[in-house]
Image (cartoon, rainbow, N blue to C red; front, side, top):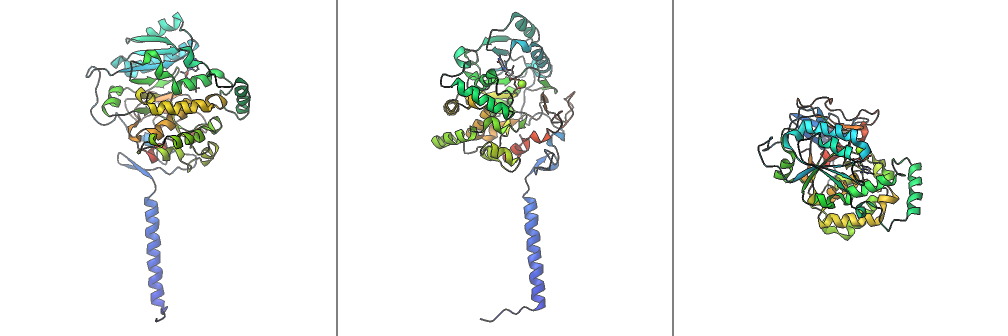
Length: 396
Ligand SMILES: Nc1nc2c(ncn2[C@@H]2O[C@H](COP(=O)(O)OP(=O)(O)O)[C@@H](O)[C@H]2O)c(=O)[nH]1
Ligand SMILES: [Mg+2]
């Protein structure tokens, strides 16, 4: 075999060739940066230090979702209720949230309100809330067996865990009723006898704000476009509050691989690129979740056999009381694993605030909400993880 002769011209050609290949490869890599297109804008989803987005998608002018929508009086109401779990002491905050939702949406559509409490509502609460709406209003008490701490929870262990979590700075860990509330929102609310007749609900908490006129029937949109779950905000959770949640979920997945949806959002759930320390602290879960104080959703998902099995598995594991599992990560993990991710909708057009976070659309339908703003707290911008949802799922 003849030896290759390394003449200067050949070396030069080879170097140029290699250079071109490296350049093309780099372009290819650059091109592979996750991007989304919003209107005429290409938005990089690469997280910049201290900034949730290179360009905030919320700064783009936005409006209602695309497609056929129904305004006031244009279509029958669907089978839905506005839903609030609330305490008598929170009356003022509830009236304020009602004012906002009635002004922006419900005075046009008149969906019934259902208020739920673990103790009976006072006359004052009922009279004041009734006076805020033209729609029907219902007041319900939670059945005792839905609220109380289950028999298999050891109260000494619960108290010991609570003080440990308190030392780690987990908010509300020593407050028994908060754990009960999270469990009820995770696996009980849709079983309340007064809710069985409804398919859809919009969860509303006291003190939340709504900023934008909503001129179409959002429940009808969910139904017509085959959606299961609507959210506005995605944030990271405190890993210390859910250290054993993901390991429990992994056990469940091993037992029930048939429940995992082929078009799932597993990559969103397990992302370790952004805030890897959260993934590590939560043993494999990014902790990114739909912030469940706002939910517009189909209760049939929660009532399904797969979710019932999922909830029972978690309930038996004890983390609602030995840790401080929130209904937000529980709902989010269930949806991310067992629902078609295309059935999850980001209501970017609904201006919303629950302290300390906002969803503020850039739209002339909104008042009192600075477009693109995420938080009014100092240094909380990095809590926003909608970027992950956009990257691994979609923006609609
Ligand atoms: N009736 C009742 N409602 C509760 C209780 N604990 C929490 N809630 C409601 O559950 C929701 C979440 O509680 P909240 O205190 O706002 O928790 P946070 O949003 O996580 O800070 C709110 O709508 C509260 O009114 C409780 O013990 N009884
Ligand atoms: Mg709240």
